[in-house]
Image (spheres, rainbow, N blue to C red):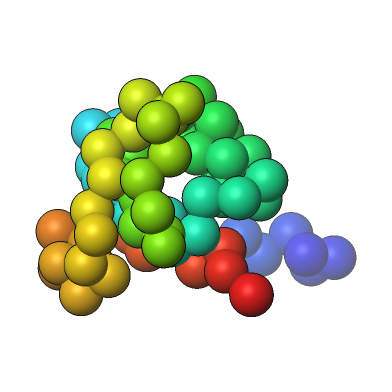
Length: 79
């Protein structure tokens, strides 16, 4: 940085997250905070936990293996 020798070529392309699916294991307070932020980024939310939460509008997946298989990103928010 001090020599100001920046790379001359293009930076590698990044992964776009919009319209991807994030699977959240554990939808407690932390899982809900993650879901709120992920929704703001345009991600689709699916979650798994010991039981379906009737107050949530996100898709519930009872099987964690199926959730992992069907998600682009998996976030573990469980103890």
